[in-house]
Image (tube, rainbow, N blue to C red; front, side):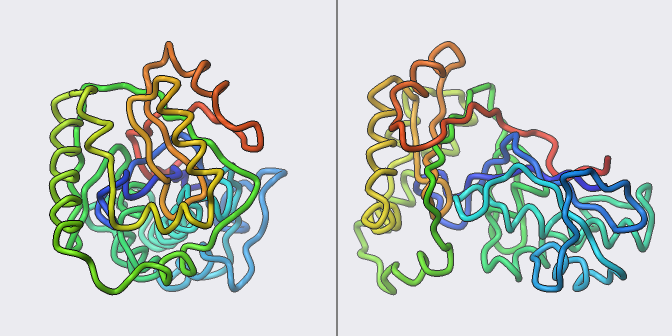
Length: 274
């Protein structure tokens, strides 16, 4: 069985380039091989895990069991796709032979997702930067609580991406490049005071907030309650907030009541064989 973490992508300014793995999980197994939990479901031919499994050379059918909410910006499709690819590789070559470095998971996951940020974080764990098929973990001395405000409504990543304009203003591009560099440096240095400024964005969040105003409200409420920083998770509508563990309960209590607040942590292991 393969266990793969959920993810939060973009982290504000790092559009399609930054991702963070968090402690919600998708389990993927091969039917008839891996013990299937009572709450697992056999994947049909259109399920993203099954499609990835077949593309990676798997034979038969997979099952999935997950507590990652679908359509909420927490990387459900990316996680199960990574699980499908790894399940196929383990089926063909055995668990002892599997490694992230030799895996097709990043390539196939990126092709299916259309971008690498979610699948890279699901595969490698922790906070990652990715571009051109390369992944680098961003190490940090920080150990924050990751508060996810998850509303009842969903959004479509594909539809959300079509609302983004084809042209970026020069000033906005410079703004995001600077904030992305600042964010990577702030994580590496453990500079909490810089995180709020470093997670600002001008490329995608305002457009996506325009159809998810409650998410905008949740971000503002979390920051006002003492979160270090926050962003729209992936294409939303979930809002991600980082904070000190001692402040997590108060921040959760300040978030809009028409959503579910989850206290998670950064997952540092990525995809693994159970």
